[in-house]
Length: 136
Image (tube, rainbow, N blue to C red):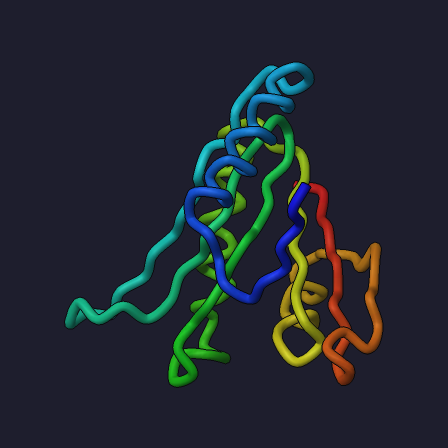
């Protein structure tokens, strides 16, 4: 047996891990997750923000959510989140969850009805990782 620890990804090994987990999950999960993405462009066609997530069963998971600095505070984030949640509801989701860092956007989610259910303090030595959820 040879165990290797590295800071570089091995695409072939990563794919085997991913496929192995998928095969194992097939014994328990009856439905596959479906990508849910929201993209926003300004009038000139420049990309100014978006959200990447997944719906699976009755849950919506937000993976990544970003808005350009110059468009923050002008309801763009709220509009993107609203669009994603509406689509998640159409797909049968009853709840949403996300994790974010204390320096990112926990207040944004709290103002939009999310509730904190977990916290990892001193994540990276300085920050907290905040776990939030919301009934849709």
